[in-house]
Length: 265
Image (tube, rainbow, N blue to C red; front, side, top):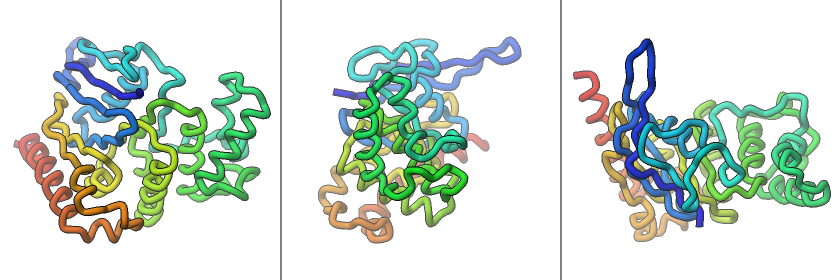
């Protein structure tokens, strides 16, 4: 089991001798093999939640667990995919993907087998010897996701992974992530500003309040998707035409807009 659990998590930051609350009493569970998208106004603490789950930061109070174990620092049970691809420009596609496995001391024959398998899954065949500068943005992000998946983590933490891509490439990558999740499911916490992306990708969408961030509401996309049989639709444009998708998207946007308006006033 690889559930990600936030239990009454508070996080405060110190600046110029003053304390500022970023998160206040966050309670959220990402169940085993579930995809939860976290949306909220800018500065609400979405990325802070991800960094706490990754072990890059620690809560001021409360706790975060993965697979029932408290998160005390980074670990091999979690892999992070950032908005910036963060690939090594001097390494080939295959070597970039294999980097983490090499650091873990995985034997060469096993490493090659796992890298070959993930290259096939990600549709990177034929690009094994290419370097990052020879790839499009979408292909570079495929490599970044492959590098995370190949480690076989229990949980995948994705911080706006498609935010740097153009609109068309972003849609293609969203569809690819859905395909990959069906073949090789993982527990995923997905941070995004895009409401359409959240509703399309996630089993549940958690909406955060403005800072200090709390969980305002959680929308159960999976149950609606099952009723509408979204899985029959491979392309995002087909899903976006469904009445249920429009309803969820509109509800989520209105919930976010309330937070933005309140922040202004």
